[in-house]
Length: 256
Image (cartoon, rainbow, N blue to C red; front, side, top):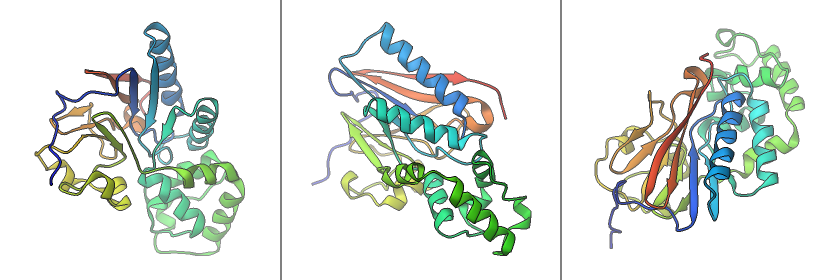
C-alpha cells in the first residue's frame, strides 16, 4: 500500500524538538560559524526542550576553507551529538580522489583544487590535468593524502545519507519518486535532480535537500531546497522547523 503524502503546509516537526537544516557549505567556514552563532543565539533567546542541527552535505570544494569546515563539524559533533552531518556528492568525491587520483573526476573538475589548497597542497590549474595521470598529479595526490588528517577521512566515511524527524526527510540531493524512503539508493540521495525536482505529487514526508543551487530557499508543496550557492553568493540558508512553525534562516557574508 502506498503511504499517503503530506504537504509542506501541513507538515510538523517532532513535538518539543526544533530542527535546523543547513544547506551546502562548500568551504565557507565563515558562513558556517555565523550560522551556528545565529542558531545558538536563537536557542538561547527561545529555548527548546530538544533540538537537532542537520547539515545537508557538500562541506568541501569550491570555497576557501574546506579543511576548516571539516574541523569545525568534527568539533561540533564531539561537543554535542545533536549536530548531525549527512553525506554530499562532493564529500564522497573527495574520498574517491584520495583513493584514486582521477584527473577527470568530480574532485578535479569542480572545486577540488581549492580543497587541496586548504590543506596546503597545490594541484595546479585544472586545464593541465584533464585526461592526464602524470607524475605531477601523482606527486600532488601523494602530498594531499599525507596532508589530510585521518580523522577527516574517518569523518567523511562515517556520514549517513539521510535522516528523518517528524514529517520531514533530510538528504543531500533528493529522492526518487515512488520509491519508499527506506529503499532510496545512495546514488539518488546524493545525485538526483530533474526526476525529483519535476515531480509535483506529494511524498510520504517533506524532503529537505540542497545540491542544486537556487537564488533563495525554494519551498514547494513536497520539498524544500536550501542550497543558495553559499560559496559564491555569500548566503548560507537553513530551514527551521519548530512544531507546525516553519521559517527560513539566512546568514550573509562576502561574495566570492
